[in-house]
Image (cartoon, rainbow, N blue to C red):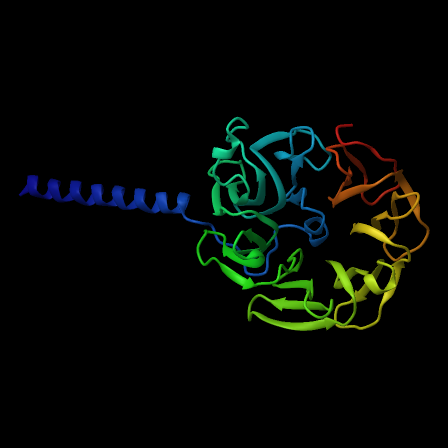
Length: 333
């Protein structure tokens, strides 16, 4: 009888160990979900290729000194560490994961035509491990809303379309045959400009999947910040314009043609177009222009400490204090 009792105890303990191991495995390998209203990066950065993303005291970035591979560093630029040997864009970070569009893989440059999923939508752990392909086709302009990634997908059959995929890789589908840019994220809403018949600013409620017209006009390049949206007013020479959400009142902040822009807490950063193009900034409410650098620049990304910008057509990146007086310096200085 005593031996039988011991056997039963052994069986129970063994079952507990097996069950505990199973649930531990599931915890470590199942997808960790987010709140429905979180976003993975600031809309202004996503609009500028999403090469930098600040999350919980760390900056995740495409390192211009190492083929735009995915790195992490402190906001002051110290302690740079390689995470994934993929050249990346559209960096989103939330919870346990980093999401990005891969523009080249680490699978080698020789016989590159044999590489699989070289241009794709990916997810990795915060330490760069356990990379998972969410969409193996070429993808761009990816933005996290809750537990879905919204992005532009390309294939030979349908060309560019607007799609979404759950962060665990399931529930993948087309949202629209039009290649809407989802970079204008704010909570559960995606702001974008219409592409058919007009360029009004639209809002997609990702909870109800309903769309509505927010502002009528010829608009592009939408950034959402502090309950306002900033955009380029195509009908007014591509001037940077601000409209409080829910209001039709416009405020022209940069009254000249710009090619791209971004917004920090205190400044609007922008690239001018013309005979003497330059990278500039002005106060966030408009005002006196400060020329930062002469030439053509792009990929304007903002963190709490620095604004980063890239010399067009090169891998040369510069930085300037995002919300303070200062001068531009090389990325690695």
